[in-house]
Length: 128
Image (cartoon, rainbow, N blue to C red; front, side, top):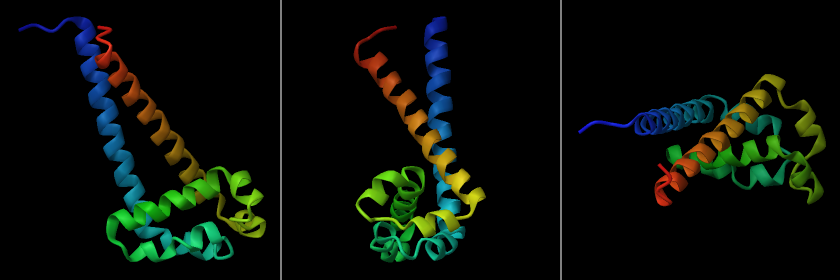
């Protein structure tokens, strides 16, 4: 059985995308286990985050859920500021290097998820 060039490219893109998602999951877990307390200390006046703070003790899934809430507040603060789910002072005092890591992590996740959906669309409609 031989693979056509398009199949080889599809396979490479799929493997790189799948591997990238696992790498980003590992980075997210590392951030969740090492920086959660720092992030919670800086966002202690944000109800959108503090209501989810007990999930810190919920194992890896709970920590990822809490990290997702923090990434949402840090990445799109206007949504949370509008309904008073976040505090302006807390967002200003949040460490810039940590904010940059969270924003890059979230956009990289969205990008890889978009590529994965594109690959699924190609397979579904048999475009190769």
